[in-house]
Length: 309
Image (cartoon, rainbow, N blue to C red; front, side, top):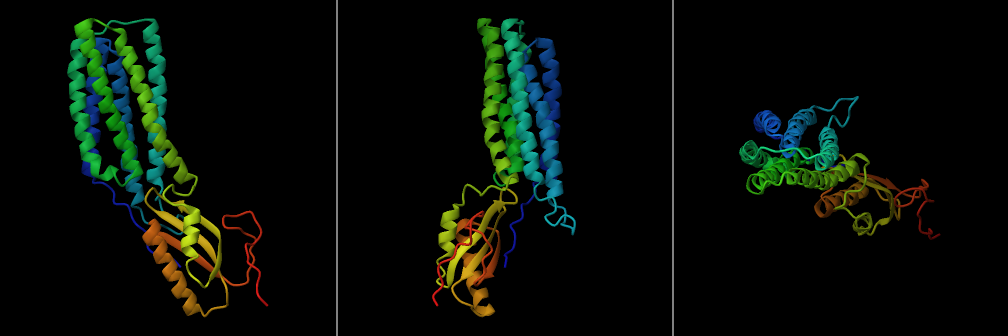
């Protein structure tokens, strides 16, 4: 038995398109400004903005794939395209961060003079435009791991630009050129920190781990509230996407009940699971005096109370 799925609504193409165009503009301006000023922080920010463009394109493609209809060969369609995109975007952010740290260390050992004027102007431009991009995707980011990963690129780039601005002011006022490299390292460490959570969330979905919001023992207890049920085994809970939770289980009954009664009990059980745990798809297999060599989760002998004879 099963209930309907919750479908993720893709963000409008115009919003993603607008953020892509804005980030192309920012990237070109920052590359030019970074080369003219000699600012590593500005070039680092430009590299991050370039990754924003790639991340947004990946997210846009994934959102398009998600809406494709399922086929006999792809019964789930491309529902996990968004999770894969989130993983790619997050890992890319971490790789960029490592490159920034390497370059920053080199600049600390061999300092390069920085022209503060272009750095300050372009940092202000980047803060404004990236802030606008974050606002454009804010609503969609709340309900999609994919869009959240793209939005994280944009948000961290806005924070990066704040650090670049601080570095430019420090150079202009105090003539401290090494601060540019130190800020780059700080930015890189923040990128790693911000990306790690999304990497682990994406990995958990792809590896079909139980959602953190669902405690398996609590789920079992809720299912056992039905007096006619002897035990629950072969229980699996996983996420097809970041918002679509699936559950399957074998339900062992005390006695051989009519099918109509079994359907009523399983229907009530499904409704309880959906209401309490927000499980969107439930598949329950009713059993009576069947030992299929599984424990609640797996790999153990059939969990069975002794039968009364």
